Amino acid sequence: MGATLRDVELHVAQVLDAAGLGLSMSSKPPSLYVGRFPEQARHALVVVREVAGDAPLDYLGTGRSWLAPDVQVYVRGEPRQYQAAQALARRCWSVLHRAQVPGYSSCLAQGMPSYMGPDGAEAHRFAFTVTLGYAA
View 1 (cartoon, rainbow, N blue to C red):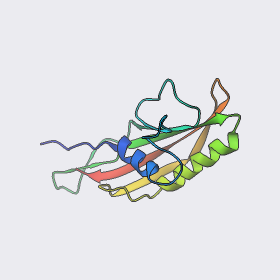
View 2 (view 1 turned 90 degrees about the vertical axis):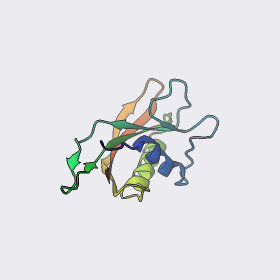
View 3 (view 1 turned 45 degrees about the vertical axis):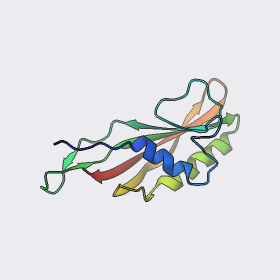
View 4 (view 1 turned 60 degrees about the vertical axis):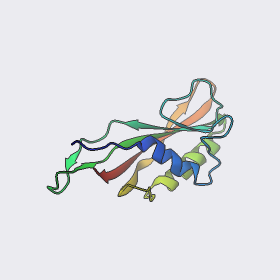
């Protein structure tokens, strides 16, 4: 039987949702999204999506695998509000780096939030990657 994959996007989003950052998957409209970037969404938002990570490794000869999926956290602020967008990205990073995520052995933010420039509406954007680790 193969390894069972986890919904790392959802689990990272749940950590952010519970962190008191003013982000919510259930607000109307949401400010926190899982997976696909929403086409029609307000400016200030966070999107969590799984990206290609390292291949599974043998877990100490146990017949299990060590999985380390990567999740990209994408932060977009209000138009022309660079410092506010940067501050939100940094708060998200701080919450996720070394977070205790139920069912995972590790959660590490890789690097710092990187500035991606403004979008067409002059909303500033930042992104960083989080790697989670677990045996399956």
